Amino acid sequence: MANPKTGYIPYIDGARGIAIGFVVLSHAGLGKIIPGKFGVTLFFFLSGYLITRLLLAEIQEKGRIDFGSFYLRRLFRLYPALLVMIGCSVIATKIMQYPLPMTDIWASLFYYTNYYIGWFRTPVEDAGRVLDILWSLSVEEHFYLAFPLLLQFFIQDKKNKNNEKNIKQFAWFLLAVCIASLAIRWFTYEQFYPAVEDSAGRIYFSTHTRLDSIIWGCLAALLLFGIESKAYEKLLLKPWVFGLGLLLILLSVAIRNEVFRQTLLYSFQGIGLFLIIPVIGLFPNPWIKNILSHPAMIFVGKISYSLYLFHWIVAKLGNHYFIEWSWQWQLFFWPLTLLLSIGSYYCIEQPFVGLRKKYGSKA
Image (cartoon, rainbow, N blue to C red; front, side, top):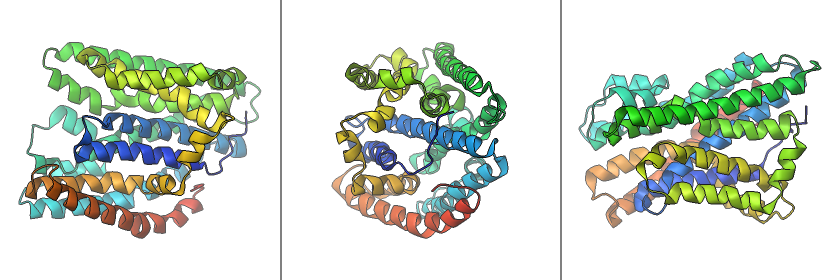
């Protein structure tokens, strides 16, 4: 197995900064020119890429994955800020004089918001959607629950002579999952057509229809760090491959056909990132890596989790008091979003870094 090298990768935080920038700017009124949905897909890809890299390193070092420590690290990473965000949401809905049902809170606490809002909840007013942003965390947590178990199942022991063969089998399995996700999106769209809105929510929010966005990141990490595929590295270093990846992403944004947007869009974005993200660290000309590694980009990436959580609450409050996206709304939205996000990062997230390191975190 190649050395996964668990050291810090600055440009990945910069890429996170790009992802959260796309999401927040699209929610701040620029959704017609800033593809916020692509920002979420980029988040998913980076999650799969990083967690696969770290788990491969753990297997190489210890021969197995310490599942207890892994899940404790996830708990300390996500729950402190999440609990504060839910508390702030309760306060926000009180201010807006709108009830926040316990069903919404339970869905948030136990990571099934994506299925709850996509399949079961009836339409609600804007104030009632204050916890909806947690849908993507649900997708990621479902992945985190299953992926380490699957990886350990396929890769039994670092001394196994067939280790590379096992990793290749796992890679083929993950590719099959990507194909299955696309097929399920197509089936879901056809099942609910012509009620496009019914299919759109179910496709966009559901784990089984969005999982491939994370899996493409896992595949990239497996090929780079699991079997050290020279063919993959050689392919990535060809300039036309980077161009192809960029073209796929641009097409995913430009094509407005509804069938495409509910089915192939996420595949185009996942494959595009599969061809682009690893190149940033491999390409001899480091200009993209240098931009993403700028301290400002890294800082935005570091606060991206809190920024993702709290910007949504502020947006819902802004919608309640001002005309959405008006200049008064913007003056309310940006300062309060930054205050809450930076405060959460330093006062809530950072104090738990030590606990995460105690259980093996490389943060």
